[in-house]
Amino acid sequence: MKTLLKGGTIVSSGGSRRADLLIEGETIAAVAPAIDPDGCEVVHVEGKLLFPGFIDAHTHFDLDVCNTTTADDFSSGTKSAVCGGTTTVIDFACPNKGESLQYGLKLWHTKADGRSSCDYGFHMTIDDWNETIRAQIPQMLEAGIPSFKMYMTYPAMMIGDKDLFLALKELHKYGAIAGVHCENAGIIDALIEEHKTAGLTGPSSHPLCRPNPVEAEAVAHLLRIAEVAETPVIIVHLSTRQAHAEVLTARARGQKVYVETCPHYLLLDDSVYFQEDYSAAARFVCAPPIRKKADAEMLWQALADGTIQTVSTDHCSFTLAQKDAGRGDFTKIPGGLPGVETRGILMYSCGVAAGKITQEQMCSLLSENAAKLYGAYPRKGVLQPGSDADIVVLDPAREGVISASDQHSAAGYTPYEGLRTRGVIEQVYLRGKLTVQDGTLLRQNRGIYIPRRPGTL
Ligand code: DUC
Ligand code: ZN
Image (tube, rainbow, N blue to C red; front, top):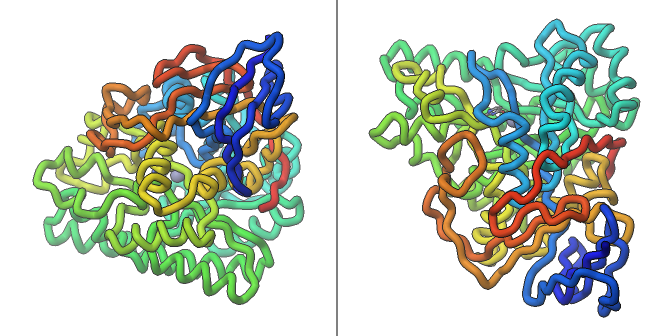
C-alpha cells in the first residue's frame, strides 16, 4: 500500500515548498508538485508543515545516576519521544569505569532492543583511557558508533586532560568525534564545600555552585586541548554567553567546533531555583544549571545566526519522589530534566511562531544538522526520495497546552506545565507507518537500531 500526503509544505534547511509526498513501504518514493493518487491512500495535509522526523541526539534512558535510575527507560522514553515528533534518539551508552566499551554497547542494546518505539543509535561514553579501550574504538565504528562522549566533571565519569587529549587524537584517526560535557569540577567542588559549611543546603545553592565561568573555563580549556590535538569537538548542552564567546574565539583561530543547546536553556531562567517550595525548585536541578534571561536571549540569537548547530534535550528524567533524595543536601538531587516529548512543539511555538528562528532553521536544528553531524544523513534528516519516511505533520493554525497528564514520560511532571503553544503536532510517521495521531501512540516497539558512520556538517 502506498500513502500519499497531499498538498503539505515540505520543510528543509534550504527552503519550504508545497508538494505531495509519496510513501512506499518504509521510505519516501517521491516528492513532487502533483503526484497521481491512483492506488494510494490519500492523506490531506493542506496547510500543514511537513518536517523530517526530529532527531534527539542527547538522551539518557535507563541510566544509573546518583544511586538511582532514570525514570524513563527505552520503553517510556521512546514513546515520549515519538509522540513529540522525535523519530530517532541517540542515547549515551555508558559503561562504568573499568568496564569495556563492548560491554557498554551490549548492555545498551539489551536496554533498547525490542522495546523502543522510535529508531535509536548510541554514542559511546569514554570514562577511562587505557590500551583495551583504545583498541576497541575501531570496533565501535564497525558497530555503527562514530560519536563518543567525555565528561570534564562528575567523579564517576570524568576524564583528565591527558586522557582527554589522547582520546580526541585517537578518535580523529577514524573520523569519529566526541561531545564533551564542559564544567570545571574543581571550582564546583570548592563552592559546594563553601555552601555546605555555611549551611546553605537547598536547591538555590545548585546554580550558585556552577556559575557561568565554570562552563566557560571548561569550554576554553577543552578547546585548547582540541587545538593541540587538531581535532573537531562538540560542546554539548552549551548554556552561557561566556562559553559561546569561547567557541567563537576558537573558531576565529581556525578550529572546527560544533555546539548543541537544549530547550530548557532557551526557555527557562534561574528564578526556578529560588522558589520557597523544595519540590518546585528541585525538579529543575540539572547540569549545567538553568541560567539568566540574558543567556537565553544570546542562545536564541546564536540559533538564528547559525553559531549553534543543534538543539537536543539532555532528557534525563526523575520523578519528584526521586528528586526528594536531596532534601537537606542539594548535591544529592539527581540531576536532569524530562524534555524529549516537548522539544519539537516548543521550538516551533517559542522559536518559529515567535519570530526568533525560521521553520527552515528549525528543520536544521532539530533534524538535518544532527543527521549530518552524527552520520545518519540522508537516511534521516531530510524528506527526499530514498530517505526513511519519518515525517512530522505540524498544524501551525492550531493551539495546544503542555501538560504532564498528556505526556508519556514516567517523570510525572514537565518543566513547561501549562505553557500554551502555537502549533500542534498532528501526526508522526515512523518509517512509513502512521505512529502517532494527535498525541495518541498507535504503534509501539517498532523502533530499530540505526548504525551510523562518521558524519560531516
Ligand atoms: N546533566 C544532567 O543534568 N543530567 C545528566 C547528565 C548531564 O549532563
Ligand atoms: Zn547529558
